[in-house]
Image 1 (tube, rainbow, N blue to C red):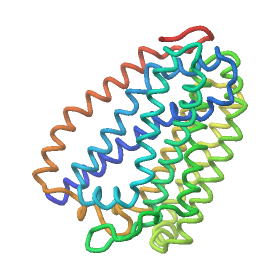
Image 2 (spheres, rainbow, N blue to C red):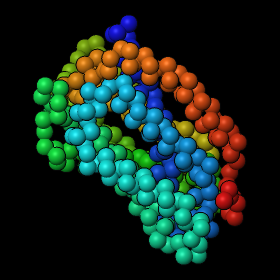
Image 3 (cartoon, rainbow, N blue to C red):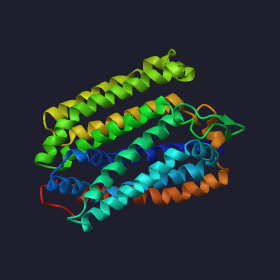
Image 4 (spheres, one colour):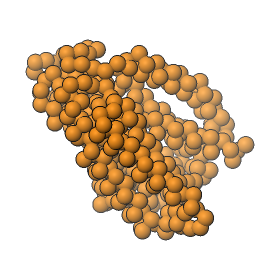
Length: 334
């Protein structure tokens, strides 16, 4: 049982992180695209498309942080000091963005500062998430199960590249969301953004897919050894097919297909990262078993999560169902 609980907790944490990336990704994405829409009515339409969803989406970030802290405190104690600066930037950017989202409506017509804040906070939060991911993937220095590196170890070309990649990926999610939820000029401009953003994301996925096995031998062994290569080769094939479906949906002006395909690309990339690094939480120094809390603590958290998680899922489904319509110019929830 003590060996099984960390696996269950890791699966739970992985699911929560995936939900956050998908759900908060598209509303961060519209913030990234916000400066490209100059008209006031277009910006109002964009923000109204996510108004019922955005604050609930960030619940998954809180749950993910709690899952890591409660389920894997030793890993948490290594990851946090290794990535203090990008984590602080992420949290400050999310706070700044949330304040800007609310204050923009009450500050009209003097709300230009809040427009800038909303876009800047979205870009900074997205970039920080990518840097955190890159800093974790490039391997944190650990000695005696404690962080033993420097405060700027995370600042490398690889982590910065990952930051840009997440910005491009979230922008694609935001563009495909607007294709699905908006009508008129907002939708049409989002479709024009769609294909270049899709190609940009695919380019970054390709770079990471080549960079990591070239730099890290264990990842190369995981993907290219026999018989692994025969099974794992299906993931890049699925990625290519999903990318084609996304492009097809954009070019044929399908409302839902581009967004669903963009989500699929994120999930496939996420699966690839998990395959590359499992069972490590802090590659390559700490596995899920080494980083786990006491079995009693794990069980206590799992009981709480078994109650809380269905409630959050139900709330998420309900909100998306109630506000499933498309937003026309001049319509909104504020």
